Length: 197
Image (cartoon, rainbow, N blue to C red; front, side):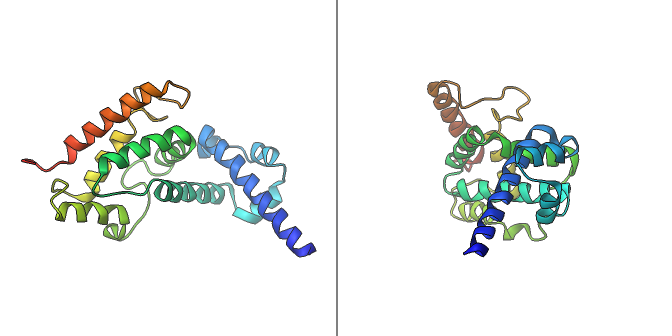
């Protein structure tokens, strides 16, 4: 029984570290984040943080990759409805603005060019396979599936926390979000619909 209690306490501590670090990295980036603030907010110490994650960079990597998995799991792609996928991404950015900020810090501090994440076989990516299948069915215009995905994601981020124009929040009126969702749907449909359809 005591071993189970230690395990659950360890899991709770690890989760507090992840929660505190997610907020810290989203706000300050990798270079600006401070381990002292993370351990204070998580009510733990450096030894536990390093014991779980090895380093500040290891902690960021764990959080960043978990954020990517969350977006894939919470907002799964539907190659037959890329416009709906874009809207669901928009909604996820409203719910979890920290996730898109983590990706932006990765771009700014680690990967200023090229792919955001390493992936040796791009066509093994389920998102790209879904787009390619929709292309084969004549539902999505021809072209590199990666480029089409990049366009749809960029459109979904038009009002995200990293927008160069306007960052929306979930505190804004529902009607405003509904108008944006409809515009986003229409624009994505226009961008990905095969010519002549």
